[in-house]
Every structure is written in C-alpha cells, then in structure tokens.
Length: 302
Image 1 (cartoon, rainbow, N blue to C red):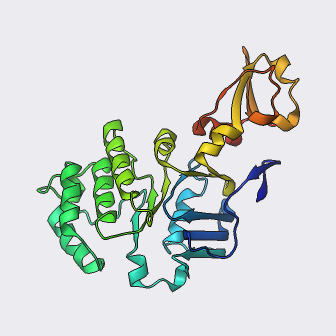
Image 2: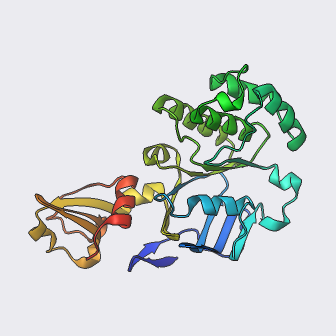
Image 3: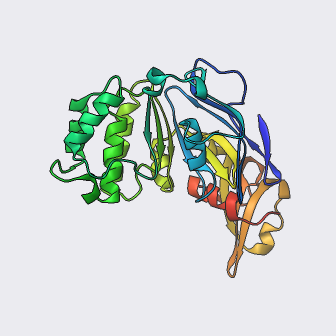
C-alpha cells in the first residue's frame, strides 16, 4: 500500500483490512484527540514471530498507541484487534496473553519482590513464580529492598520480569530499557531474543535507543506528530534509502523525486535519498534507522 507522508509517497505494510491468522495485533484507522495533539489514522499490524520497533520523537504518539492497545486509553475512532478479537471484547484469559512494560512503572512502592510475586499469583492465570525470581536474579534485583528504594532502571527490570513470567505471547513494551546502562540493555535484548525463539510470540517495542532496535527488530514503525510515516521491513530500509554528502551546488543537480529530505551546512549538504533514483555519479553511504528518522522528521524538503 502507498501512503502520502510529508508530501511524498512512503510504503506501509501490511495494509489495513481483515484480521489475518498470522497476526497478533491489527490497528486500523486509530484516532485520538487531546488538547494540542492528535493521533491520526494510525494503521499497522504485528505479525506472529516478529519484533516491531516503534520509533518517533517524544510526544509523537507512541505511548498513546500502546496504551490504546492495552485498553488504558479509549480511542475516538478506529479499530484495534488482538488475537483476532476487538480490544474491548478481550476477556481475562486473553489479556493474560499480553505482557506489558510502560514508560512509567506502576508497581506498588511499598512491596518487596516476594510481595510482588504473591500479588501476581492472584492477577495472572499462569503466573510462574520460579521464572520471576530467575529473572530477578539475572537482573541482580535485591530481594530485601522495597520498590521505592529501586532506581528507575531497576524498576524497569522488575516490570519486564513480571511481563515475562506469566506465559505471555505478545509483549507490548514502551521504553523498556529507559534508564539502563549499555550492559543491562544488551542483557534485555538477549532475553527478548530468547522470548522470540517461539514463532507464536511477537513484540511491539518502542525505544529512543534506535541502535537497540536495529539489533532486534524485523519491522520498523515510524510515527511523527501523530501520523505513521512508514511501516517497513528493517532490512528493506537499508536497500531503499541512502545518504549523499556533497557540495550544496552538486546536490541541486539531483532529481527532486530522488530526495526525501536534506540538510545544508557551512561546508556542504547531505540528503536522505531513494537509493535506486540516484545516478552513479553520486557516491552514497548507508543510512541508519536513526538517520532515516531524523531526515524524515527534521530535514528540509525540496
């Protein structure tokens, strides 16, 4: 499907439509309006066996979208389906199939890990206390301290341990590595790799650390100012886009249809381009996901 974004055509896949057996999530035409911000016509899906990386600047709509999937925010319009059911029709057993980590940790601050284990046994149908404490040990979480004594990063680890300890098939993760050092982030990526060894599982994960998503994800979903810019296979992005760096006067010679966006500086110019539309006389270099995001969001248009 082709969607016009920023005055250009950007491919978006899979297309909105009937729910497929190969999907755990389908969002179609999701809209939510707040004072000063609107989520507009958001559509995407999360296939089984895939990790979808959700990127965008602060306030772009990532958290609003994820909270809508969890039923924490009621959209103004659009459809959300999980496991083939409308979100509002999900029962307790269906919701137990979802593991969630939100940007703001919602754990009771006066509890120890043993208390959290006891509480979760009454919430989740398939709670696995042994798995929870294995993750707690792996994350070096202290059993003798209350949550209020934990750092933000430690609280994120507790939330992830909970999400992974009740047999979830779908993980909805909003900035799960926020506040963590590179070693801890890499450790969490390894755990998510292990989770994805089952082709029945899927992950939707938002993060400002785009390099983490490049390591983990199969698809990249990019939202900007409440609108989806593209939803593409990660590997296809590297084939589709490239960077050109050259004197500003040479850049003018490019076909405008080849240029997504550009920057001009004192010593030259750079542009995000469609690789297959650039003449061989221009030297190109690989564009990272972060490069692509920045040019789409902040670059100048031809």
